[in-house]
Length: 424
Image 1 (cartoon, one colour):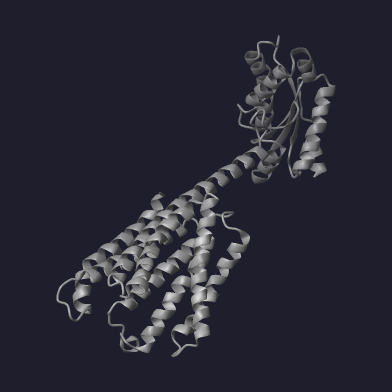
Image 2 (spheres, rainbow, N blue to C red):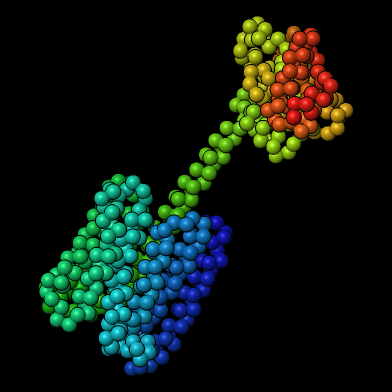
């Protein structure tokens, strides 16, 4: 895990510890009929701490990869936090008294919001391609479908049809979530497996509660205690799933960047010599304008290929590239047996460096390729850049190279420098 995550994670842990320490005081001051810490008060404090930690945890990950599911999960955690406060007997002021209608509205809205945000969370959380397009669209409609039924819980003597519609929306949302996870699981989603494990404890608590209500005819007395524990487990397992999803996303992101970097290098380099190609040389020309450009051409290279084969010819090209890279000039290969040099310095230094590299080619190819009876010589056309563009300087250097070839090869030609100025 990147070190930059540690500060927010430490903050989350500190808040959890603070809530752990505050649980006894919270229980004593908030529950008027109790004079000692109670298990439900301690569990509430622990659960609230887990929710705060979840928000800090998601924020740390979001600072690295801005994935939307982290925002939705943080929103779920904050809703759980507010809902937990509302379910506790904490004093929330005269406007939200324990038995007031406003408190009932507060709880109903938060409960529905906790269900409503689950659809957007799941559809951004599950890996792309693991959910069918139709299911993906349906998950986006779960939030408005739930929220338009919220008034049913607040209307006195709610019409049965409206309440039936609400129940249908809740059951439909639950079935859709189960179907989504099952479909993603079948398609190989690791995230779906983590989330199924996270939700299984919550579903188990609700299942036990329904069993008590329907078959035993008595309420499940441990419901809130068990629900807090199940939700705490859900928060922890979801956090583990998010960490796993994040690490896989980051790995894929890093691999994509590495691939893009490799493609960038490939697009600007010659595969045989490793030198920059024409595109790279032109970019270097713009980034740092040289005093001169030289085009270097190996003499009688076709004869080398004909006599010794293309394998030896490739070795000659690589040796020439290595020789040209041994100086202060920036070397590149522009095709076949032709190279280009960007030279820096004053006029005398430029010509001296170009001549040194030309002789270096013959010496190095002779030393490293025993099949050759002698080193391969080279001809150079050199031009001072002046105010010329890259294209025009290359044209004049090519003309000078042709002059070097025509006058016997194995030489450097640098005519009157007014040519470059006129060309510009």
